[in-house]
Amino acid sequence: MSQNINGAEGTYSQVIAIDGPSGSGKSTIAKELASALNVLYIDTVAMFRALGFYADQKHIVLEEGPSLNEFLNSLTIDYGVSPTCLIKVNGIDLTEKIREHHVSKLASIISQLPSVRTYLLNFQRDLALNKVCVMEGRDIGTVVFPNSFSKFFITASVDIRAERRLKQLRESGDTSLTLEQIKDDVRKRDETDMNRVVAPLKKAEDAMLLDTSHLAMGDIINILSNEVKFRAAHLGFKLGSN
Ligand code: DC
Image 1: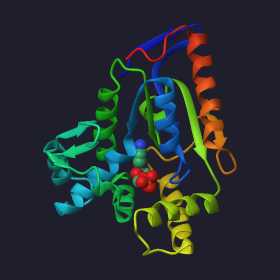
Image 2 (image 1 turned 135 degrees about the vertical axis):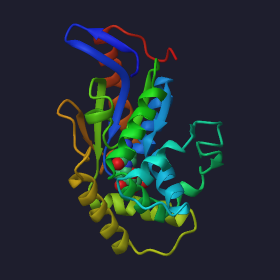
Image 3 (image 1 turned 120 degrees about the horizontal axis):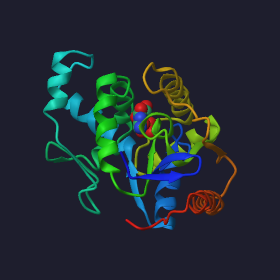
Image 4 (image 1 turned 30 degrees about the vertical axis):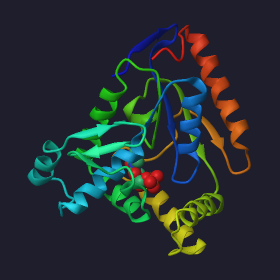
């Protein structure tokens, strides 16, 4: 677990939890918030994407059982290796690969398996040990760090999220999908993420909800960083002290 802060109302972890659906803008927000607060940024989506991709390459059957356990036990994940290498699995740099559109589907499938979630939950808790950080994902405020001192649930309408995704794909030279196909993907992904049995995507009761559909990035970062600073000051601890 990350280092705990003892506040008047209980004990909190120093992780700033950012959850939300695909395309809500949470990655950009989490990165910029971490930079504004001068703390570490941890992208858990990259971990699920990397494992989904790697398992597919190795033709691992994605169901619970001894062979999945054996696969998980054989893994070494290196996260945040260098400014250009975000993630390695068993020594292979997957930083670029995990950004490909089809990997999102593989991540969604593997993320439904309880043993994979437990494996990454432990990995994520170890990474955040003794650090103030912004951690982005789907279940950070609900499952990984339910005692986070500052939680946000970032969302946006399906139309806006699909348009953002289309723009990203076009910028990376991918013209294979239409806006309608992406919208359909976004809806299906929401459905799977919100209805899976283990750690479904949902807002933690104590998370601040932010709809980014019509907000400028600068305003969003201001709102979030003010809230984090307020919470930290209230609990009496210093940010940016990694
Ligand atoms: O944002 P994305 O579509 O690239 O995410 C891929 C999948 O990863 C998504 O279907 C949910 C899963 N995921 C998760 O279940 N928990 C996390 N902490 C991060 C990602």
